[in-house]
Image 1 (cartoon, rainbow, N blue to C red):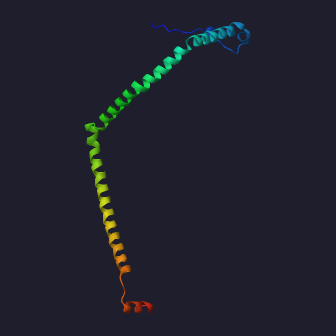
Image 2: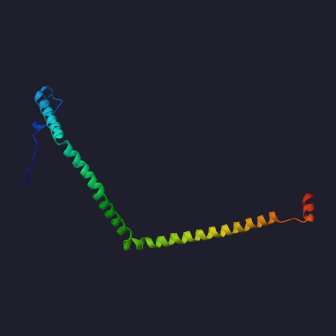
Image 3: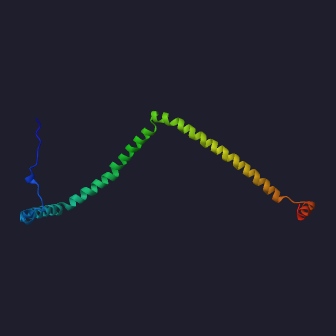
Length: 140
């Protein structure tokens, strides 16, 4: 048989109950506990400060770099996992081929535009013969 521990309902403190609110005993216990905590903090304040500062220093200097190194190693292991690489390799090849095709198309377009600009520049800089100038003036 299993026995379950149940807290009796009489053990619950209801602070809204009038008899508890008037009961000075609960208030004095809370006050005494608060004074105890304050005395403890006053007595051990510097110890607590140094423990917190030392803990932060140890975390910052030792634990955090170790965690970072561990996480970096885990990430590298996951990224270079042969199963994962085998799945991603065809996608990577497909994307690279698409990028290569796009770069090739862009270079062809740039070469055509460069050729076109060079022809325009050449035409602009060309010295016209007097006959050509007369023909243009006449609207031809």
